[in-house]
Length: 271
Length: 306
Image (cartoon, rainbow over the protein chains, first blue to last red):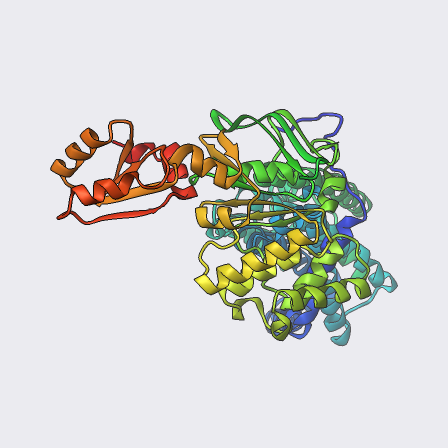
């Protein structure tokens, strides 16, 4: 149960960025390895699905299949980057390395540690999205001048998935526990959230569910708008309303999950 | 003794659901002192230390550090406290020197100053040659020293060291002791938790013996030894007849059995036991000086007591 006291909102200062900085320093130590998956994966998907499958699926909503999945790949990399950073990555720092305990013994409080981790998860998602965008651009698949707006969207989408992952981290008894959210939540989203297969082709109930509870759907819709300038009618909503819903849904869910993640982690760490 | 009270606990209590880890304890720590928290595992030592550095919230009672309440001034308190925890929580993602630099950043210490302090600390703790090493290349003793070095990066007034020498070889222990002694000379106030009695006797001006969340005794180590264990201890291998005879010979003595050994404590000056040794020429008996461990076992070692 979440207590909503006067001090219910996390107390955050610029120390959040000190925590962020720690993770950034670690990341930069091995940046070439860290960038590799984001570089190779989209190339493989574009080749396999775009050129391979694309010879059978010639056109969706007036654009080629490879161009249709390219924004989906950007959305997926945001989800993976942030979710895995704040599940496996944060869990290792919290549980095995005791890094959080070490930081909490300094003037930085536990809320700031978790907020720093979440901002870092969002940052990783943004880095990854930037690389995938570059790959997509190299394949000549960008057709909207708004594609750079995808970077801030990646950050906020990343924050959402970071907070979602951190909630699981707060509840995880051990590291194997993450198999549950990965296979029950992340993999289904990877497949059905308007990424590789147009959501519009699914039954309308499933469209409604995807719009109501699957965050990746909204990130994918925004991505397709910003990268190739296309939005479909989904769940009975016109393209404009699909975008409005995506933005509002993400803003609300991110705020809720951000506060929930900090609350749950505080409950786990402070004894 | 300096009289300025730095840490003050009044009825300090910590409860986890129905378990009371720290039970209405009162104590004071003065500036410049080295105070040892002694107690068996699970006695409440670490919990008390964690409340001092504002990690664990206080359930009941009052705890102030430099006049500030731990519940309301955690940031200010943590600025002036250095914490060397019992477990290794060095950052394995960084080298030795980077560990200190990153830790300094948590205290808002500017980079140049942080590097300067880090180099001084590495020198002081004999880790200079290891500055570029990864954490997992360090020995247990080096890791312990680095943890203490890291606790000093903010030039704390109070250093909290939780079991500083657990798992160290004798050389490693003495290096750590020497370093703690020289910090004390520099005026740092030290709180040390340990279950090594020789460590407490070697370093502490005062010890608090904690068991089941309560302070059961406190005072200067030598004073406590005299009070509870006398001057000498007689040790004899366990034997029914010898035990009986000892009880008859020394009716006022306190006799305890530890495993297969009889220990006789007596509140009398040197010389009493020499008479006994002469009386039992065939029995192997040892007279030794009483120490803090005798006090500790006498006060906390219920389960082994006859």
